Length: 240
Image (cartoon, rainbow, N blue to C red; front, side, top):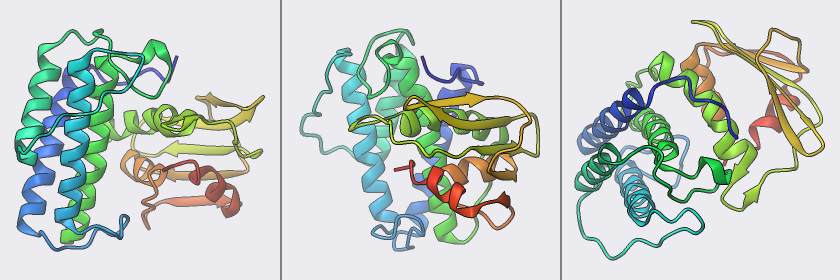
C-alpha cells in the first residue's frame, strides 16, 4: 500500500480541472515558449503531451481493467475536450472502481487516477507558467500531498516495474511553510519513509511547493540544501 493521501478526493478532483485549465490557457497565450525542464518541448508540445496523458488515463478508467493497460482508440478531440472528458469520467465514478496503473494492485482504482492527475497537471501548469516567465507556486497543501505521491508513482514504482536500486544514503525533506517531514532510506531493496525530524546524509528545506518541484527535478533557488549534494542527486535520479 502506498503513501496515504493527505487531501480528500473532491479537493484533488477540483485541482485536476483547475490546474489543467490554467495550463491550457497559459500555453495558448505563449505557444512557442520553451519548457525549461522538458527541453524538447515548447508550450504547444507540452499541451500535446498532456492531451495524450488525459486520453490515456480516460481509457484506463473506462476499461475498468486493473490487470492490464488499455490502449486508447483513435481520437481527434482537442486537449481541452480531453481534459473535460477525463474530469467528467472521474467525477461520475465511485473512487473504488478498479482500473489499471503501474503501482500496487490494491491501489489500482479511480482514486489513484484522480490523485495522479492532480499532481501531473499542477507540475506541468507550473512548467507552462515558468516558460511564460511568471510561475505561481503550487498550492501548499496540494504540493504537500504531491511529495508523498511521488514516492509511489516514481520512487517505489515506475512503468517498467518496481524500483529496487535505491541509494544507500539517507535524505531528509523538511517543509517550512507547514507541517511535513520525510526521512528517506532503503532496506532490503525497499524504500523506507518515516515522518520525523531526523538528520539525513543530505537535507532539503523549503516550502511545500519548492519540495514537490525539487522531487520532480525542478529545483528552485529558494530551496536550502544541507549536507552532501551528491546524496541529493542520487535520490533525485529516481524521478523520471
